[in-house]
Length: 276
Image (cartoon, rainbow, N blue to C red; front, side, top):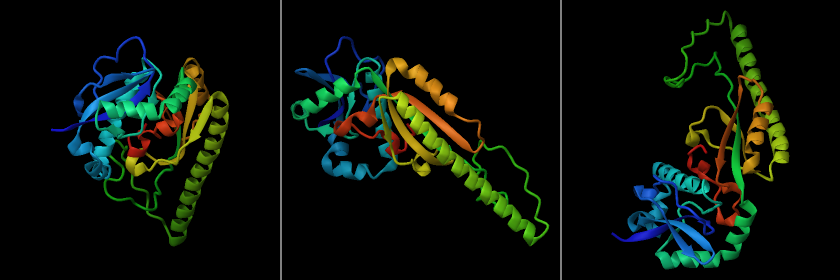
């Protein structure tokens, strides 16, 4: 079976080795390929999946894409624990080691500049969700509560049509209130956290059908933070997060700085639905 070279990330030569137990695509450990003052983290992948024609079809398979994105991210995350990296786009593939070296040569200036900018920094992700309670006047589909939902008593039948309409109006106003609070919190969080970060990036809201997260994503932001300032950044997120039953804040990280790697990087596996 013909094999291609899957390229995960670029870094500088460093002392040490990759963490034990790291497995890339296909379950094989990645290896380091030195070329001058840069190093690529690469792995062998089958041409039947990653050659140009089959890869186009594979990228339309959500399950395959999600699994590939998770493996890609796991390798880069492990690399980030030992050195600064420039994450490459998902499914960056070369024919052989010579192709990997040409990739480094072509992007040398960009990779070097990006590594200098990202040195000692990590990415934190912050999401805000509007999670209004379901409308008690409108029963949902069977099983929509999910396996972890607590059982609810069926609401009493409205005494009249006017009572029914009053309930519907109250429920709609409650949902609109949750959205307004989520949007206001998103503006506050982003303004405050941007001041504590060296850079910030706003991504489009995540599709809940892909992420399987509860509620509707209102804010999907990333922040570039010096590693030594991470504890203070996390504390600030906690301080700014209100106790609001209908609004939920999710903090993730620290990650490799996917969102700040420029053209050499990727927006991150969120777009494949891994919920990073």
